[in-house]
Length: 321
View 1 (cartoon, rainbow, N blue to C red):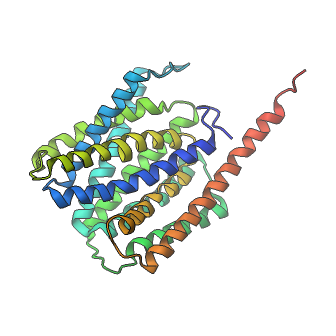
View 2: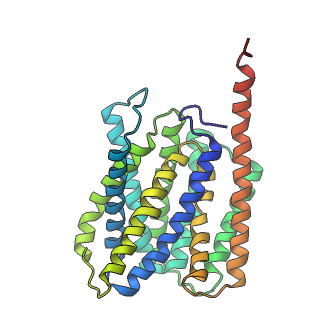
């Protein structure tokens, strides 16, 4: 059950994506704590998140040299892949923060994360002939229903058209990033460590002018706490999570990736109840169970889909003498 091009087992890719989705969910809780004790804005926070993640990823590469690939892609191709991925990541994050500011967290989250699986499923079908099947389609529908119940269950929502447009732009950036990672991963062209480092370098440069306009240095009496939170955001939901995301997204079907990453709001909801003191509602519980069930079902289907080609290859190999 491995991708022939990259050698990463599909089961491990699913595990990487699950950890990444759960880690992404902790970023919102950490960001809310930063906002409570400082005047840092969302674009500045996103800049420091990417810049810090870039520094950590570079440090890991220096301390742990990566094995040389058997086939090195052309420099022009590598730069194109890194540039497109980095711009997609910048659009994804910045447009989402802008959507939150324009129409609120609930609507921005539902539109961005809800439109992502739909756009990715359509794109994967048209460009890579990846089919979900009836079971996969049911899992996607269940996950989107769980997302809507989880995030909109409180009923405290405000829908503003401009915010919805920004959320759709964010979903488009996320979809392009996911589809291209999968496309390049099918032929072994997705060098996950290099792609991650390069993408964060591009994203950091894209966010720098907007961060300077907003103000990069926070004014706060709790500077050590803010620095600690920024270090956590850069390390866990950024450097670690995105490294795992790019590795897993290269071997797992794109639509499956988009649904597994819906674990982000589940993780955020658990932290909100457990650490931030928010009340556990029926909507939170039902939405969480729906999403977890859908993710588990789609992961099983993905594993079985990967087992077919692996079994065929094993049967075709000659028996040892």
